[in-house]
Length: 115
Length: 115
Image (tube, rainbow over all chains, first blue to last red; front, top):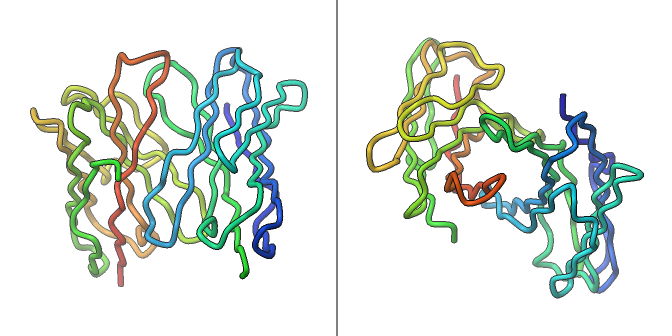
């Protein structure tokens, strides 16, 4: 069975600080996919990134970067030079390419960026 | 914006009633998944429809049912509403066959309150 743990329930930082959101996953499958979604107050889940289990290369997109480490079953998300607009709940999720590709989500981390 | 729309935005029902929520997929997408998100929790997978057939189901009772139409839009029906059904219901669309797993794009959700 798959499980995703986001141990940080809430994080609050001052604008321009760097912040890292942690994600630990569990799975017995050798092929799996990891995701990050952002949920602003409007409620819609916004897709940020998808990473497959065979690609451990870190990725950077503007101020966002992701660190995937299979050795520690972690897929952490860093926001550099945070901005107030980054305030949202962030979810890490996992799926496997079999049957209905249901997303298994973590509990989410509420990130507040203070001006 | 993802192009996934949901209606209504908000809904208030009383215990025992029935409700129908609607979702219009992103253009070209053939798969719809429904999730329930209780307050402060991550979304939980309800079921998925692919080409008008249920393609997988999460741990939800039979009073949660769905339909997918030839234009790939979808409905979620909940009978005999209970207080615990109060949640944000999210619809996600994807295009099966685009890769080992298909990124799901979410709509804005329907907030259901059961009194």
